Length: 218
Image (cartoon, rainbow, N blue to C red):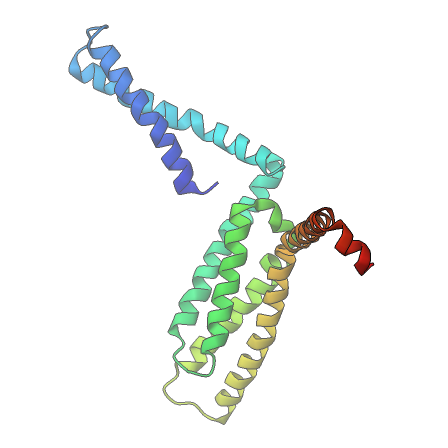
């Protein structure tokens, strides 16, 4: 679950609990203002602490994962987030016009894959090559390209390296597109199935509405 959303949900529960606890302590139980406030804050904190594991369990069950799988995926997604930050820093440091579209595509695809995997962790298994190989390669190459392109003086050898790096990044962009396609492949299959069902339903309705016309057409 999105950490901010999870925190927001816990806060929506904890704030009323804190308020109600304070009112109960201060009026019916006749505690002092300070004691009521301390107990109310403690109850709010405990509500946060207790709700957190329940949210995780619910989230894990929803996505049909074991706790071990969830920890494994969460760890790798956290590492990938740092790599994507490195990638973005390198991308925005590059100033040449030759690789603008390439950089936009790389940024868009990597963020899309990571965002989709965060939302639905089971997609991680369809993107393992991206997380364990392709992302590392594109980060390293982009950082290398950023370093070379920022040099004030460039000789023939450096220019050739830049050209070769651009070509390799172009190939890697195609590989990233394949990774993205693999991640959404189930959605594409589901969509195609729903389209086929819809077409079949429409055809059946036409046949029922115009039986005579369909008979002559046959």
